[in-house]
Length: 214
Image 1 (cartoon, one colour):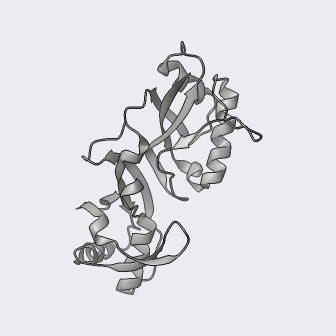
Image 2 (cartoon, rainbow, N blue to C red):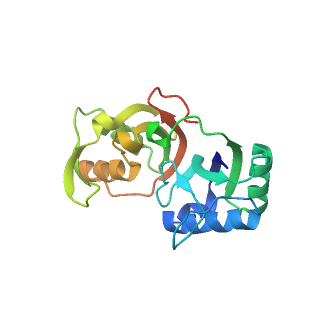
């Protein structure tokens, strides 16, 4: 038996799946693929799946990661990805399978792409000014469900404004996760702007050294 790390994309209509539904979908895909996977022990046995950093509802992901355990040591990483893709629906594509290099607790940052409606180009200027502040404090739920003050500015590692989108590298995982939804809510609330739809894609997950997590 060995641990296998799967790298996949989640796009299109799949972005509307909640994490619970995503887990159900992946369980069906793995079973349909016929891969020899390990099941947890106990009364309620299920396929072992560990997601690196679950993706928020409505976001697309181009570098998603989950770990499973394979009971057949002879099957190759190429065949693992191939079998999964044969059972996956549109919007889910397994890019590769590999041996895990680092534990998922070492994920520290995530890169996101934000695209606003074309008819409001001024929103990028306002967002740049908003993010240039020394501090922006908002309320965020902690792990116990209590509301606490949270300064989003220190959790922004990098910003890059292009002509029609914004690239943000934000803290993720155990480093104090900053969800783009929280950032956008604070932006609209603090600027008095009417909230508008923003297309969000997660492009990459990084370790503490800002290297792609593997």
